[in-house]
Image (cartoon, rainbow over all chains, first blue to last red):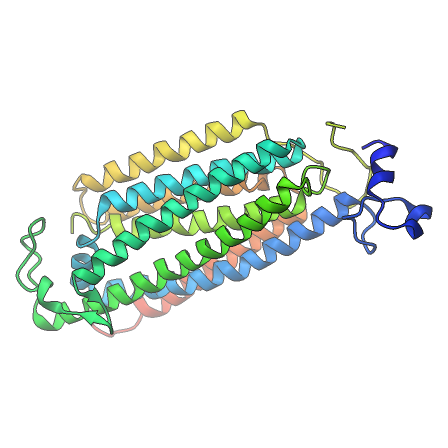
Length: 246
Length: 109
């Protein structure tokens, strides 16, 4: 960055004796140090998120072993195509987000906004598919506590005629669906938060806030977005795939 | 102006801009692995192999995302250590809990 830019970005007149970009906080020596600290802080936050979702994954593993037939039958009721479509959407959105970080680093404002909007659209598409699935589960009476009936698991289904559970085990599919809604619900909540933050990034990015060396907000939002992608990368096989042939 | 600045700060990690080519290659690989994992789930593998294959592919995908999309491959040692600590804690959470559950005579295992 040349001295003209630094001078232009100096926040107030009183700062003339130690020129720095407006986004550089006083307790940091350099933009790089500030960025490194922000990345460190973001990763620490993500560690707490790993443990949060880790508890849900742990519960899923234990209960899947306890009520195995119920979990297999519950998994059979999900739409494989919807899970596959959502995984594809999220992976492409991770790619577009990575490109947004690249645009911020190379200071291309329009590219940054464009990649962010692409990520936003893909994220919203994911939520639409998820909403469709949840609606389908509501129609099928698979929502524990609100709209549940074990009837669908007593006599076999069209695709899985052998899914004939005892009434006791059919009731246990509620454990599967409770964890399904808890896990996909918490994941979707993270997506909604992500989409909201992304909207702010787009508005501020359009004004040029992140294409003059201030990469940290875009980069750290990218870390969050990729983390949410990773959670889904594990939810997809656990909920949809591993019970197909059991 | 287009050049990112380079300061010689003791705390700074070497600024490394990952090229779009790398992102494209990683994104493509992730989509291929998604296809593989769906394909593998359609085949009836013996025993628990379906679960093993699906989770192994998920682990490969996660590693690619963490190393390249999340820039950990190019990050400072502090960031690498933080990420490693996170995975270690997660592994402890899963293995210690599971060790406890499978070693009890509850009749369900």
